[in-house]
Length: 548
Image (cartoon, rainbow, N blue to C red; front, side, top):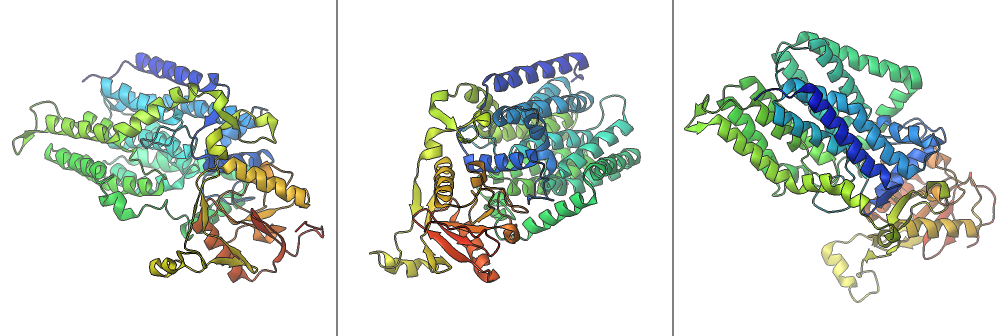
């Protein structure tokens, strides 16, 4: 197949970004129907950065700064936070467009190039993290961005040039984008860098490798010039913290399930089958590199919530590009062109539910009925353009343990090995985990804290994944704390109060944090205990009377 016409390809991609970007922006805001807890974490980070706080240095996160900077740029131009998020999606797509165009034009036949490029851009612009659940979510946007960036790098590394080679340009793009991934989500770099290095070495692409290393170092030097050496040291400290954390070394699905579980083994199977057929077709080096990439794909998938094998987008493009012409390579009675085509079709079928959900998400978002949504930040009217489904934000449904001491089911607690009730400072906390109602929880607890007399500007350490009360009431974000939780009681040294919810959004996390508080032997003084939460004052808390 011939190369695509470069002008037609570029214009098509530009029109595509304009069309989908226009659909996103014309809604006038972001309307969330799922993962609103993750959305609150994102809002927490963005509004901290708008205050001048820096990731890693002033608060804990294992995510790189590039996951947030595009949104902060728009936020600092007095744009509402919902439109800032959507505008960042379009900006990232526009910035990646020429690089995706170059990778597709220089490496792929015409129809494959168009399909690969549009799929990569659609991944950036989508409003869901994947799976087959038809929901609108900005959660884990950085994974989608990182996959698209990775596809560019992998195309330049794995696929041979179709025409004149540009080793210097390839190296600059590869190194610059790998450095970008380090500053976006380092998981992708860790998973893919070894195979990328092997591919460049065995192909003898020394100039490309040298320029890639140089470009990566330049990006690192620029970041150091803007943020200082302390930024890098703090970033690596956060990464070490999360890698040792009991809560967040992975997303919960065991690695063995990602490798051999019924929901994922098909994707890995077609990947290795593609490598086998490439070797049968005589392309030993690329078969080896593809085989080396697959463990990295599995590692990244394991680390990404939802665990969608989005790497299949690249695999399909690579297979269709590398397959030999019909009848040229026949092994064991199979025409390798047809065999690899069948593998590509199988990969597409496996990925189809997630692909359709990603592709349709901008349309679903545009069709959302605004009457069914409410502001996520009701106390911040300047950010009323980010909204949550009313049911998701307010439905106070929870899973509650019925086998508590004194209940008719108490004897079954011992049979199943349920741990002893969670306690802190003499207060016992029920086994209760919320399913929805994030906005209601933050609003009610925040309002109750203010009514009880917690002073403005107080810093609160919360033993749950939802802790952004400062977005609702005039409190302060916890210095050196974490919008999520990654271990080590981050920020507790700056907290005025410790808040333990009676019903949490992640009971396991609440339990870990409470056990760490108990082990730390902090001087906690109970100042308020009601049906919503227990509040403990730390010695540095202001001497202000709190209503019990």
